[in-house]
Structure formats: C-alpha cells, structure tokens
Image (tube, rainbow, N blue to C red):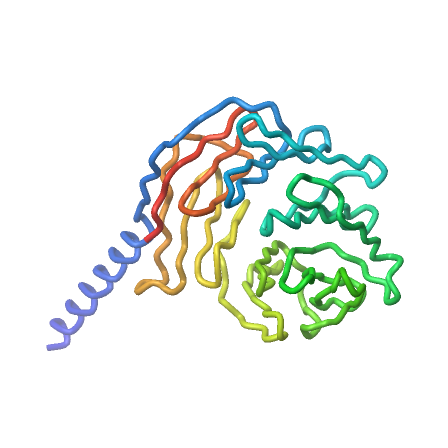
Length: 271
C-alpha cells in the first residue's frame, strides 16, 4: 500500500513538473507587418492617430507620411521621459532641471513647469499624464506619489511613503504602476488606494500593459505574462526575428521592436 501511494505521489510530481515546464514554454507567434530603416536615437511609439514619435539629437519629433513636427529646448538639457498617452497634451520631462513641458498636438509649447519653483518644492524622478488637468508625480522629498494640477499649480500627495526605491514605473490616466528594487509590483489609483499586484520575474526591460498583464525581456528574449489567467504561472515567449534589440513597445496588438538601425512592427494577439 505504501509503495502504491509512493508511486502515485511520484507520478503526480512528474506530471506537475511537466505541466509547469509546458506552461513556461508556451509561445506566442508574432506576425511580421512592416520593417523599415531609421536614423534616430530613441523610438517612443505610436499614438491612436497613427503618428510615430522619436528622439534624434535630443530633438523630439512626430511624423506620419508627409506631416512632420518637432520640438527642441536646448536650455533644459536632455529629454528624460516622454508621455504620449494623450496626443493632445504631450508630456516632456527634463529631469536635470526638474522641469516638465506640455506640448499640443503640433508640438507647440502649452506650458512649462519648474517644480523647484513650486510653493511646495518637489523633486521629480517619475512623472506621467493623469486625468482632469493633472500629472502623476513621484516626489523624492517625501517618497510619496501625488497629483499636480498644472492649471491651478497645486500639488497633493495621494499615497503613503514608499519603502523601496522605484525600479520601473508606468502611468495611465487613473493609475500609477511601479516595480520596486525587489521586483514587487504595485499600483496606486487617483484616490490613493495602493494594491500589491505580486512579484515580477527578473527583467532587462519591461512594459506594463494594465493591472494584470505585462511584456518583459530577459537576455534578448521577449515574454508575455498575465497574472489573471487560469494558470497565473504561465510565461509565454513571444517569437520575433530579432536576436537583439534596444527597445520594444506594445499598443493595440502591435508590437514594435527598435534596434539601432530599424523598426519592425509585428501583430500579436495576447492570450
């Protein structure tokens, strides 16, 4: 009887191990859409109107067909962060000068904010567009996430102080997502509700898609993860042609891979 039970347990262990390996080895086929040579420094992605955004020689550019717009501000140093979530109000952040510039859809400057000159000084390493004329702000002076109303020039904190440094962050209109140095994943909404979303695998680059999905790269391989799936342990490899790449971005089922010489667009349907 004991031998029979032991055999059953061994078989169950083997089956579970095989299932885990199979789950880790699931693959997503990426269908090639387009590929073109570029002479740019950083590819930033596309907006919902079909415009592409990139940086060349610290000049921010937007183009589609024969339409080309650009913005440069040499007095503020290098562009640190670009947020194109709202193509009608684009966020350019210059971290060295603790300053953000908001641009309209033709890249004309709408407003410029130096956070060091705010009534309550703010030191900003992380920023993004939010709702109702507000910007997401992470303030290193109090280690808290907040919202800055750029019309009223008012700042309010919404989160409790973070206990670990931010390794990566991503924002949408209603949520500030971040991954800390220990690879713990969190979200904070505009009301200050903070949620622990779990731990992410070690990564070289990552892009959070929503509160349960993300794409990440490790050793020049690309993976998709959905923590809300029936098997939340599943990590699916995305099959692409590139053996190495500098950056990737995903929007509306289009995966864009940027290397030093070209941009390749794939169509992928996540599980």
